[in-house]
Length: 237
Image 1 (spheres, helix red, strand yellow):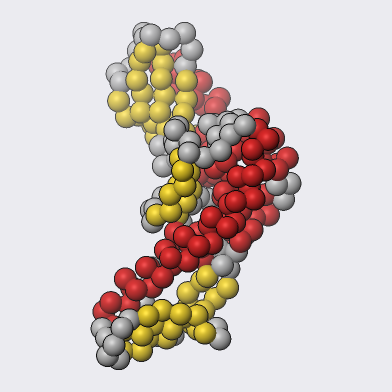
Image 2: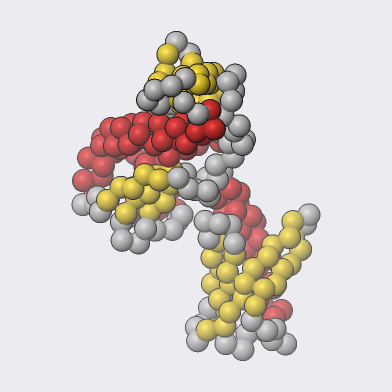
């Protein structure tokens, strides 16, 4: 018996796997876990539901593992209020925010364990701090990435461009055209974590999916990548 295309779900132990089903002229069933942790299933036209469900259940451990992996790349920094006394991170170190409301030109700087903001309007603190983080990311990321880009020259690949911007769901990404995008939030993590994300995206220039070959390359270039991945999850959790 076939089932209509659209949104469906199956229970697997205590987990529920939701997925979108489409039919295509193909011989085999394909399952894809996307970076936003959504799941899409492409089945041969006329495929029976029992066979589709059986294949999804068989692949369920892999699906959940991929979803967990992508979850680790979602920034989880608690919401900030941008008030004095609040803790903010930069390159893995904590700094206490000090906001000074005074006339004159606004500025942000690090000084002896503090992130100091001078502004005529305290309501502008969030914008100023975020602008400061972006400027620091634009300095730190290229410097950290340079050695990794050079190392990947032996594979005859290099990013077409590197973009630094705020992202809600990912620490980094690599487009099919070879553009690497890095999240400004990443500048809050230690340099080793930044290197790990850069390396991860460079590996995608050779292997678009998280295949065995992808992980083999990542491990070859950074044997301790798991330690930095765990550190990233811990620091910005």
